[in-house]
Image (tube, rainbow, N blue to C red):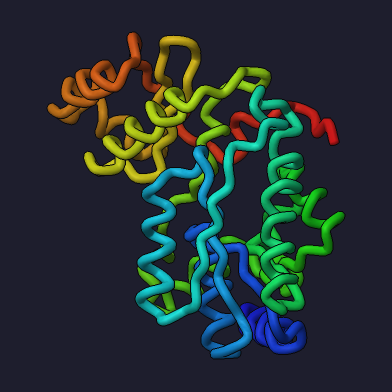
Amino acid sequence: MTDNKLAKLDSILIDINSFAVAFSGGVDSSYLLYRAHKVRKSGIVAITIRTPYIPSREINEAIAFTKKYGIKHKILDIAFPDMIRNNLVQRCYLCKKTLFTELLNFARENNYKYVVDGTNFDDIGDFRPGMKALKEMSIRSPLMESGLTKKDIRELSKKEGLTIWDKPAMACLLTRIPYDTEIEENTLRMIEKAETMLFERGYPGTRVRIHGEVARIECLPEYIEKIFQNPGREGIIIGMKKIGFRYVSLDLEGYRKGKSNPEKNIL
């Protein structure tokens, strides 16, 4: 079954000819970019957008990936869009509209016919208001179009020897802040520092969500007991308080995809 999906993906990548890949450095866009480069060799470029709410670690990993495989790569620096400054529920839709307009402009100016992204087949059933924006802007999603799920993509990435095959999902930093809250640069940097500290302590994929002066650590369920028993727990608390948090809590439910989504899709 996966072989049929992969054949369809290759066919799509060949048919759409010249294109730019919206490259975040995550598992999906990394596999899409790698496969496009393997199938085509030329006529593609990876574009990574750098904004204040994208962790610098993600940008650095995207740079390292393209360098390793010799893939043409462009970074676009974009200021914080004022329209999402208050973290509206429609944030993802408005953000995608803004960022992908820049991607489309770059593609047009550099003679790339399409812009493609790493949306996969599983994303169809999730709360993804940004997908509405992609559809309106005619962004192609080859992984979704070929029926490849996240599980498929991880398995194919592992088969190809890509070190990102088991990389935890990572959304932008705005998802750590409650809706209808004004975003401040200092808040974003506090979140980034806290998550980097936890990553370096062996807890990849951990989110640090802010609720006033409280940092709520939301990690993978298998890390919860480890954090409780780990003698480094006190170090985590001290580190969080040095960053600027007054209280530190551990979410006993752990991380679940879509946990912070609103109950109803407003768009």
